[in-house]
Image (tube, rainbow, N blue to C red):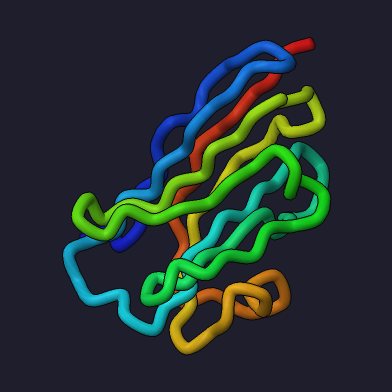
Amino acid sequence: QVPLVESGGGLVQAGESLKLSCLVSKRTWNNYAMGWFRQAPEKDREFVAAISWNSGSTHVSDSVKSRFTISRDIPKSTVNLQMSSLSPEDTAVYYCAARKYLAPDRMGSSVMDYWGKGTLVTVSS
């Protein structure tokens, strides 16, 4: 069973909002940090946001902090990324990831245990 499956990507216009969801498999995610990364064409993968599955504490990259919000819904087994005021610079494949025994603010610089296959977000100008 694939542990992480992203959904919600698509084509939107600049200024619009979009919500991505990461469906996590039915297993225990206690002590995991869950997060989102993105990779734009011809660019390195970039950390976006992370959340502690246990506590719900979050850490969001400064580059998107004013526009993106990460949350988790334990009963629905999802990790969500709400994105607003999107711009063409946000165009990328967005990946869900998970790492055990990691604080959310360390996720940007750590190796992940699990990755999803990604969902494409395209923002037109």
